[in-house]
Amino acid sequence: MPRGFLRPEDRESLNNFPSTIEENDLITHFLLTPGDLAQVKMNRTETQRIGFAVSLCGLRYLGFFPQDIETAPDNVVDYLAKQSECNPVSLVSYGQRLRTRQEHQSVIMAYLGFDWFAEDQKIHLFQWLSQRSLENDRPSTLLQQASEWLYKHRIVRPGITTLEALILESRQAAHQLTYDQMAQSLNHDLETKLNQLLQPDHERGVSPISWLRRPATGYGSKDILQDLEKLQFVQMWSIDE
Image 1 (tube, rainbow, N blue to C red):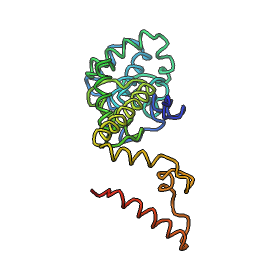
Image 2 (cartoon, rainbow, N blue to C red):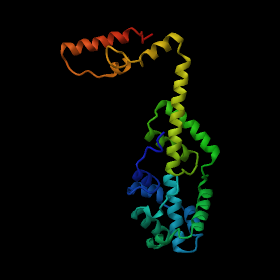
Image 3 (cartoon, rainbow, N blue to C red):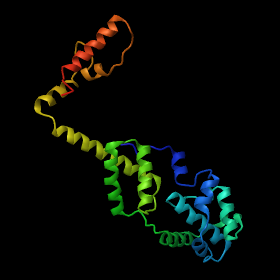
Image 4 (cartoon, helix red, strand yellow):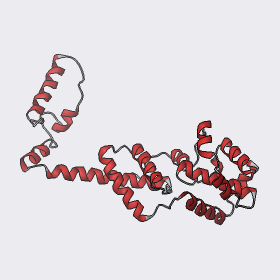
């Protein structure tokens, strides 16, 4: 199984702020409420206040704490700095003490009602994703659905590689469930006929399934006869029944 389905640059971008945030989103998600400001002003220094404000709004907007807080777009930093009465440049010094950042994250999570992604939640998400994979197993779709599920349940989204692995495992589980359900519905005769589709046909030089999957190559009488032969072959299976 592949270790992931995203390119390295996509992983990096998905672990941080988007490169741009439009004005409407800025006002909607980064306007500090009186309660937000009270939390921000509990921090003594400008660096702590601006870092806290960016982290708070980052979690509320993205559903996770950005890996690199300095990826916040300039308009976000300037907007939050003005509200918290800080110098935007102060953000550069934020996070030099890992403990400070961890303490801030704990306070922000408690304030917003978020929890870390724990093992029991991982099991629930895996089961949920396995069911979604039965409907649509496209990895990018499952990634979006997983992110929405986590946000809805107020769980901090884990690193993107963790979600990638979980999505690939859920797809595999869904495929296996599909195979198991199909196998249960096959009687011995049908199973034998299906296996024959995989056996080499010496006249055609390929297995019947490979022959059937070959697309039409032209419009001549020979091409049409070959397609009619395929149609006749398929009709013998009484697929509509």
